[in-house]
Length: 457
Image (cartoon, rainbow, N blue to C red; front, side):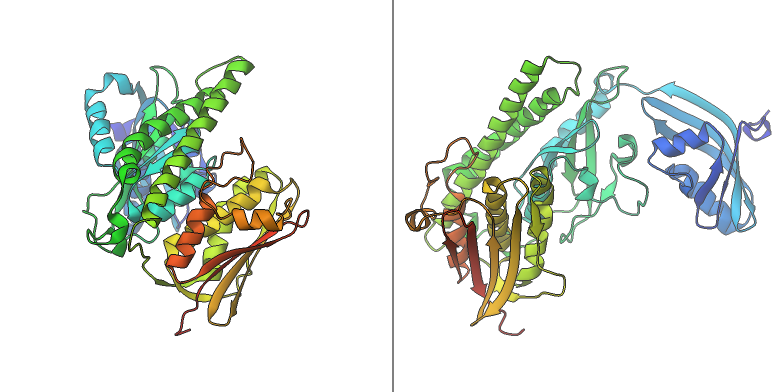
């Protein structure tokens, strides 16, 4: 007896938009576990393709469908028959088999080793595919890397959306492994590789996400050209940072896995120790970034590459990136309205870096329940953004010192290196602008970034 002649195990219907309207078990459960909804677009890729072909051809089609469900491989024989505007689906057979564990798959191990070698961005995720840490040295991916770093705790698909996928995210990790993703602003095609941290018989306790492209990097980013001054790195940026960032990020990821008890039950004291390790690791990563940037901005002949940007739009992006961190302290960030514009001539990546530093500092030093206002204007040939907080404010003496190298105004234990504002002012001046402050003790602080206005606007 052929598969098509067996008894019907389950029945389902879909509409003309390939949305699963009704389904019996086990198909209904598989739809939900693959990230789909009921009703919702069919989430099993091979079934979706079969339904589309049957509907377009207006004739009955049948074939074996394969899918992954947790640690099981599903193999089923499914018939699809056009019915009205949609289709009727019949499941004739359904078999499950345990998938090989990662440890028992030499081919998967070799693939992971190769992918790690060529990946241009690496991130560590928890069991729910939420970001824990990220490391990246590619100038082309600087914007998405910065957003992911600031978006710890959010699903990675918020920053690297899979192409042509409309299902609820995240999908099961096996459906996303190898999926093409969209990298905003990059002309290349990208895909992700998800390497699970898994023990036989258990669900993954976390993942390593590797961002890969089969296309060679182009010279679309001007600062990536060999002769650009920005590429001449010193000891930290060229030698130490690339070597240290990945192992430190691994330490942070593993410590966060322990702290959140994803690997199993743990006494509170040990979870706190793990949290301290993760915090120290994040501090080291930040210090490496600051030291590398310090070498760059202090090079002779350092310059930036001007872009035609909207300072209001960059401000809104920076506020969005740091929104989660602000909400953790019950702080609201009031970004420029969508109809506000401030056309400017400045390097997008560097302006975003400065604004992330200013808004990040405002979050760090503002009290819970307060507000941070970000506003823009165009005055006297300058596009200006103001970042005002409701923190403790600074005295006249401290305002003179706050932009000095390694200056932390006597603070300790706040995770800062004392380099952020120094680097930010150097960047502002390299773009032909300025970074200044207005403040009074007890009245908060207002940082003012001014860059050249777009002369053609």
